[in-house]
Image (cartoon, rainbow, N blue to C red; front, side, top):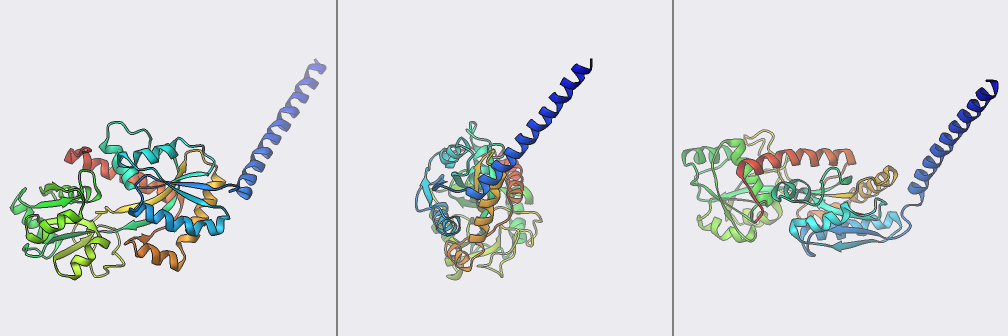
Length: 334
């Protein structure tokens, strides 16, 4: 009996020792991952074609980040299927911090609701690194439309259900979702007129054939300054730095309204926490520099940075809000 007890005691000590060694090895491995990473170039997948907002943002960001990381960051454009192709590449990549994606609320909040089959889960398949920027949208109307505020627009739309038209760059675009969100929150009916691009809608808005359009503050600013249309509000929770006198949709009478293009960086799910923290730190450091802010402003974007947890909350929040709008408006991919 004593022999059995001695054997059990030795087995217990061995198990504890094994657990201790395993924990020590895990902790050591985490430290090594944090201290040595990165040891080779990092690929930043952009799920859209070269030359667009996401591509330009990626190139500005990686140029700054590689200075402090001490390794090259290579932009890899993998466009197609509304951003699903490039985004899915990263979802299925090794979770080692060497493959990242510069995604948006388009790939992570809109696409999952537009298509019946999406090859990735925007929450479960990614490790959020951090937000990069937000591009405010503006609600602009034909300058001869008898409205001077969002409340005026809502009153006119209620008096003429379905008579007011709006242009967008197509089904599921940020402009489309923004207008449908206005309709849902204000209880009004607007008629959608899709174009190949938001810029293609402007001639019809100027001529009065289309009543309104939602587009980026960057693109619309020139038309506001030339007095070719009237701007009523911005779609972001805070006023746009480029248009400080323009109220937000919330201030203009729709509390809680928020819809704009945001861009953020994600890694594959299960990427070590130490690597996520390192990337978040270096990315935020890059974004906080004055020249980075200036370069982003030239693209009509405002720098927004924070924690991985804050990005995850933004994804979940947009998924819920956009999903409700897409379902209510019966929006489908073109």
